[in-house]
Image: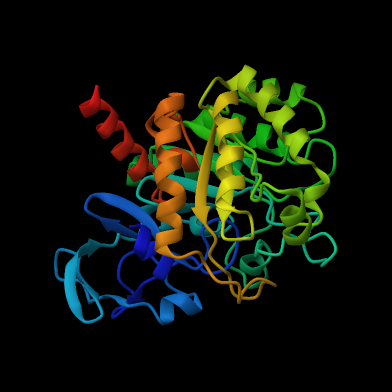
Length: 366
């Protein structure tokens, strides 16, 4: 899984399974692939993927594809089928797929607000972000209303067995930073269907928003550092870096008091310039606070300033994720215990496999 995510995947039949996500927020330019029972998001549109040694042959009648590496069969993979709820649309004619998407095998994900106050200006925009691309190309709508989200969430649960939901947002302002619209959205979804929800936003200016989010029905919270050292943060995301690492750490502490240990998480992108030592040192601090550090390999997205920036190789990711898996086990944090969200899904990183491996070693040693 680590090697597939680092190298990407060529497809003999690009139409196999659910469509790949190209542009936008979340795991863009990726396709969900099930490997030995584990669904992972694998790059299929990047330059690295086009030169990948891995090729998935056209699937058979059961949807199983032979996976080749440099022309030799090395295993079998499966592509999740197109969700049934994608066939539906709202009363005013908006396809459900423009309101929310299936991520991984059983996660519903939406970007509630597809614009960001930081996006589009080199002086403030995150250099890896493509939040505006899918909107520009008409693959989504800007503002998903609470009513639309509730309608789609209910259909996704009934038709496709969705187990949890991720709500992220572009940053609309410099005060609540999206918490208010996430409250409205979560409240509507929970009124329609019993579905665990992770909300994702920048740290709001007032920690009272954490209680409001929980009261609205949010079960888990993601606040994403992306990079851990000030110099990398300033270079890669000059606007978002104005919310400093100490401010994030304080927000994490406040949020854990509300949501509980292990129910607050953060994305960290490996390969942007932070050293392994810096990432692991930050992860150690986060785990001590009760925050799950979801470390994923950076994958460049076309049309962004970092589209030519290389992804970290498989060996580099193994060197980072193996010790992190041990740290998580020692700290008592497990992805399986997260109620909802990216860490629970785990498809954007092979971290959970290292976590499980470390747990097995510890069990046998004990």
